[in-house]
Length: 175
Image (cartoon, rainbow, N blue to C red; front, side, top):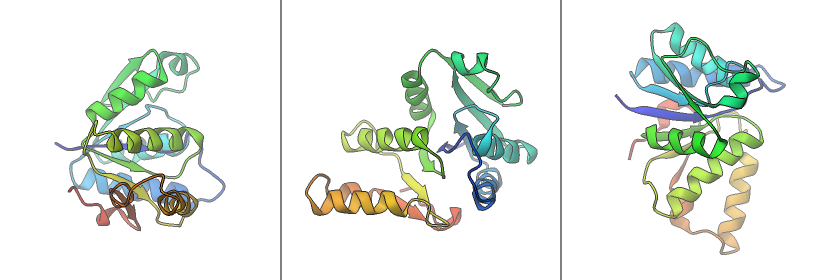
């Protein structure tokens, strides 16, 4: 069973489209019998995607630092919940469990996780697919950034072409 690590916000954002996007990716994960791996929270888009998958009988694995469990942010209904000590451990376990990575809308934490996993790909630590759920143009600014970094010689064309930009979940490619 393939596992998809999803990076996304612990908030819903200001537009209901973001929850719709999370639900659409959740439906895609559940329908294809994939397993969700994510940050383990019950709030925002993180909670929405896990809830939608679990509602359909799918599997959701959370990875959360103990300090966030103590603040009652952990999702209590997950298939599995891995408790870790640090955010670094969280990202490593999420990476180890993943067969692919998809970033949905989110804030600094989402961007941190996404950039780290892209960097690990650049360094050859993994060759797993990475995608941006850009259904509504949320990642247009990030795409502009990495295209500028390409033009200015800070990243390679191979790096850019390794990041899939999705308009819908069905566009995702495993290779």
